[in-house]
Image (cartoon, rainbow, N blue to C red; front, side, top):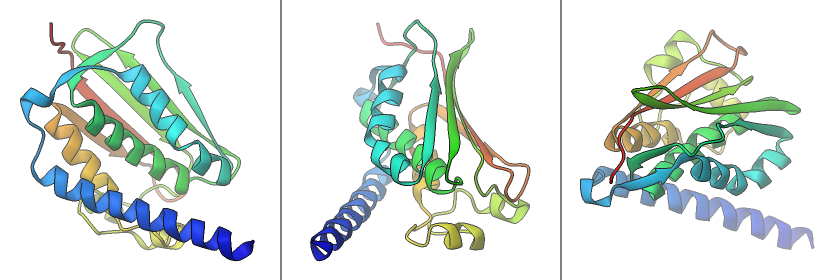
Length: 191
């Protein structure tokens, strides 16, 4: 039975890596404007959290989502936005300590829609911040915490979000101080 479980885990790793490589290839082409549609961000966040529930459970990390009662929509490619958000939540989970929380909030003001992600994980040094969006670059701390990573999820997430008229900001007060991620989309909707 143990061998079967090891095969299952190895298969999942191969599938994850294949999907990430496909994402890299797809992101090179950008997102065409005609692929944009109204995207309900509450649904996207709920889907991302559901998709990553097994990982969060295995890492003993609780995801807490705060969202408004009214639907918040942006004009974007829903599959790409889901993918970028999953990359960010995945990183927050794997780099957080067991029995901690990843907090996600969704809000809007007159000009933009904002998603914030906060974790209490390994944080970032000033040196790490220089390479955050460089594909295949990882800090020593990140490599020790999660040796299976490749270091291109944040690069892909930034590319996807930029191609969908958003911005991605990442901040940390230092090592073991957690990380704050913010995505900002200009308020636009297709009629």
